[in-house]
Length: 114
Image (cartoon, rainbow, N blue to C red; front, side, top):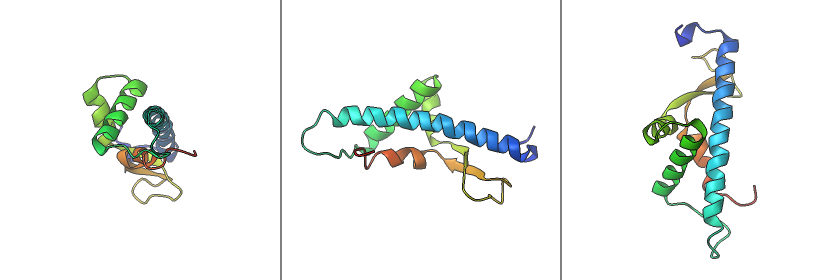
């Protein structure tokens, strides 16, 4: 069935499932960053090298979703339907496609105190 023909309830269910899966990847990646941060005594904040940060996201996605490294990289860089606070005009519900690198990378700059 084409996505545009799905009901609002189906779209919201897909968005909730995608959000839960993304949260698992986020938690897994955050733990990996905190483990790396624990190995330094120079700063309470660790800003990961961008390339290494993406590798950590790929590894976290691979652990959570299974599959190979290429599938994990595709997942991280893909757009998925995620919940929103406003009704999206294209989807007709409180969910819209978002690129996963944006919400997933929010964990990197400030890892301590959360």
